[in-house]
Image (tube, rainbow, N blue to C red; front, side):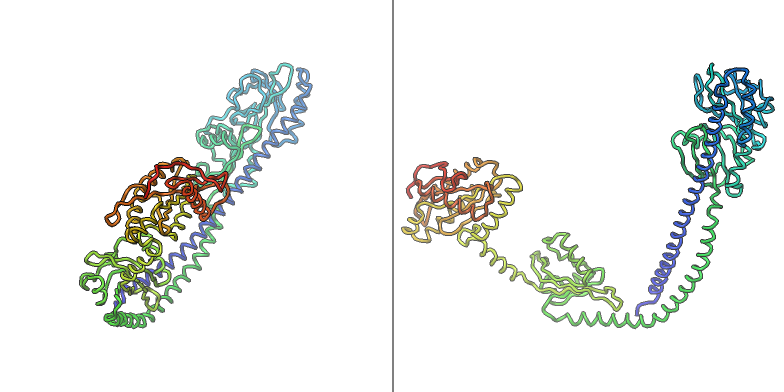
Length: 635
């Protein structure tokens, strides 16, 4: 009886694989859900960045248009007070602004909604974008400390400052007489921060506005350092290449965040939003806790039930194993004395037993083959593909039957009719293979002899009419594929009947045998020479580039046919009349038509005086052309 330990081990391996598989599927589904939630959060971050950028861009655009209208025509110094009054009216409907001012070419404020700003110099040389010559687009500077220019100063880069006590300076071009006046805008970061904080609170993430060189202009996080571009160089590089984008980062929040940015299409700034990844995944973590809380107890319960069921099956399994062992022993005894060769192997094809008939047929003793693989009997006549197909059918259907060539111990190859059957156990697992075979070498030899007789001439051993028809069709297909010519050559002996009548049929047979050898020696290996019967032969000349390339071979055929030969001690001599047709021809031609054309050409050669070659003419099907005539030879 087989030990139980391997059975338990296999069971536990399968059980563990099932549990791991279920957990793997569950974790894969949860991970896919996590990816979906992250993608959704990225979309939210991108939408907020787009919304903030759009609002700020539209606000600046509206300010530019309103200021341009106000300043239209106000290009003299006497209009400065009216301009300041108009600036003040504009500020009442623009909470995103602190002040509006006019500055001259020396960067000095000459008019402002805040009179205290007048005379203050505001350097704009480092504003972006850098412009050589007259300004034509909006330019952004770095943040200032203070509520307005009068009481403020440029912020030192990297300083943490509340949005309520900072401003952002920007300049806009104006059309005046001198072309030197510009609009100086003090943006209100406090308003913008409050607007963004309403949609993105500090517990969820933060939003910030960066100049295109990475300088931080404002942030919803009061602890963020404003100004300076060293912390945002990676983002700044993307601003120059992309209009918007998404990425995972941890620089702004100090922890993993889902970052999205949107570059203004009109002005040199970008809005960046950061969502905390842990906040985005809170719902996913809740789902994970719920799923694992239900799945784990279920898996434990199913595992306990499976172990109990396996215990009950152990006794029955032991009985089945013992029964199978006895059956294998009985099977080996049954096949010992039958006449067919029997070979029994394990599932891995290791030979476990053979019968006496196997020993008699192969010449190997039982001890010599036990433990070996049956491949040592291989004769080499079947290739790898044959055995792969055999095993594929055997494994798929449980049996295989066919002819195969093996080799005896003395090296002699023999043919056998082989049947292989798989012997499974009660669970369908293959335990052994049983091969039964008969030696059919004599039958195969007799069959081969019959096939040779049916396809070859018994006197000359040349192909007969049946095999000629098959080779002619193959040669026609080959000629069409290779775009070469095929010559069908009919050869009829002149004077052969006189030899038969005067010296007898035995002498005539000797002439036919000798002549067939000579004619075959003239042809190439790729050509065919067949005997139709009597003194008629047909040759197939393949792979001819032109009709003229067949002439040397045709002349040699005439020459060897006319050479003297010995027939039962008598020197005899014949000649040949040869008719030739070529393929392909205009129109469709069958193999029978080609032979008929060559036959007609051969009869025309005889009518023209024998011992010559005639070609079938395409233009006049009933006419032939004399190609060559050898000197007359009287047989």
